[in-house]
Length: 352
Image (tube, rainbow, N blue to C red; front, side, top):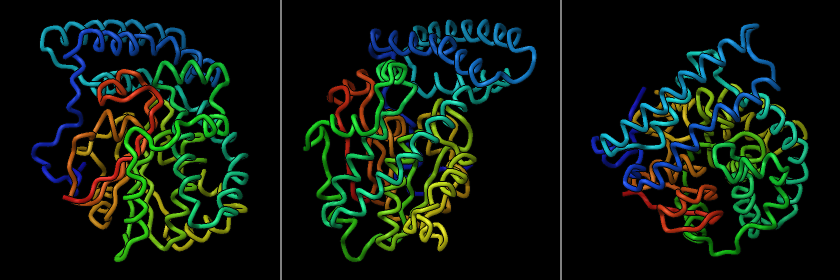
């Protein structure tokens, strides 16, 4: 694993400066949220077919150890005064893997990818019929609307189970511009500037509408302008995040009937790389060597989603331009940066 070569101060790197233990109420909220994940995941595992005939025995053992582990984390947070969301994520995923439940959300991702793929032609048709000068408003709003599909936040979990995460409805209901942080003008000026970017490294977030209806239309538009775009999903499962093994076949499916996407994939203007990630946050001190090599040749890095660009890496400085784009779906994350729930972030920082 590598430390991202584009970090301004790699020796000072910390995944997040947000210490949950600084606020007992916030700390309790996150501990309770993670304590409840087994109850939510069990339904997905049973629905999608558990691995092995001894599911009930293994699941009971998993839950017993999970509960004990969460209690130990509570006690440690009280004792040390330090707790980060990535610590909770790593604990959860390590235990899932040890008990051979690595991807409880696999079935949900397949289902949501299928649903989004059916809508994809409609979305790109609308984009392609829009004059180039006006396309980016649709693209950015689509990126935020797609990012609503997130099974790690209480509000969006509730909305998902009520059938309320409809891409087009979310698109209509997005906050009016300007968003909480809205550097759209500076971003577009630089994207269209001369000399232009050569390559964009795009760290992506969720499966379903997020990747299919939000990210891919943006990536194909950037590639259409002649830039190279490299999409970097997680290496291994984390909640409903897309992973590399899923993204390649999904892109192959989407290019059927989409000449722009097919051309970008065929000539390498759009490709993928394993980020090395295994949590909903992004630890830039532990990325794959292949991803680091891509970063060295990239002049713009995109941190998409609340986990990758706000909960982690919010204060990091880089030696290339960085674009953070996300919809804030957790009220404590929004509070931490002084925003409101469901505010939009389009933050663009120039290289330092």
